[in-house]
Image (tube, rainbow, N blue to C red):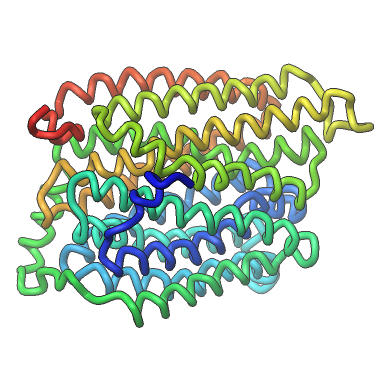
Length: 432
């Protein structure tokens, strides 16, 4: 890493680094299960991919609802209590995925699909509380360009954990499949302890405000026209994000015949690209309008979907029977997809968060950032369900050109949104 990159991660308050390490540990747990959850519940447990997608949709709707509550509570009672409670809840609900067949057997009306959906709803509820509180906590400690760098630091920490989780998860999944779910819950428990012990409470909330006034302020914060506009654009981004968890692992196993350890190793390209490019790339576009950085992100997302489409055009056959001579090309294309979509993610995540942070006051920030997360979760759910439907109805090859179309519409929407922003809100220095 260059001297410039090291400079970009220096100078923050100690609590910023503690939160970053905590998220690294938590996302390590997420990486353990991320590429394998769909494979496990679809190909091993036998739940239809559209129902797996429905479970992920329910999880993301639950997360979205909890995120609005988390944003409200972060502003009302403070960031730290919400962050600690969310991680403690995750410790229980995420481990619940290991017991889906047992839950289905114990509760007579439920089949495995119903049990998966029920656990997903609970996991989404606990998970959703954390993000707006954590992002608002970082925003409280930073300002201006430093805030962009701080969110980039979090993204790097997240993806060091994510990538390590992919590799370890691939090995654990081959050894004993359910251990990845138990370990995911355990990492959340560790993070809850770390946050409780090491992070000071710097935002005491507004507990003296009447509930009616507080809810009214929260509603006013999240219903501003530009907040809703940016949230709608984030839904489209999240539809693209969702494919890495839902449909791309199925392509890797069902079309290319890769094992779980091979998939885990291939998916390391995502966090590796993030770690290498997150800070220098965001630093390189720091002088741009934030919306222009997001348009560049859209270009990489569109390219990544085109690459997966090429995998289908190669027509390698189910599970690359007999190790087709073009299999290496297919694997290379899937790797290229992961790199291209990751560059899109590198640009999108910190820039969109900083842009939303700039649209309101300090007292509105938690609520407004919760809307960004709500939109992300809604898009994840929609993308997971729709992707599953395309696959279950034999239309998998047509999913990818459809997503290219979504990308083009997203680019147009960003350019229209740009016209509503002041230069300062859009990331340009006042003297510019």
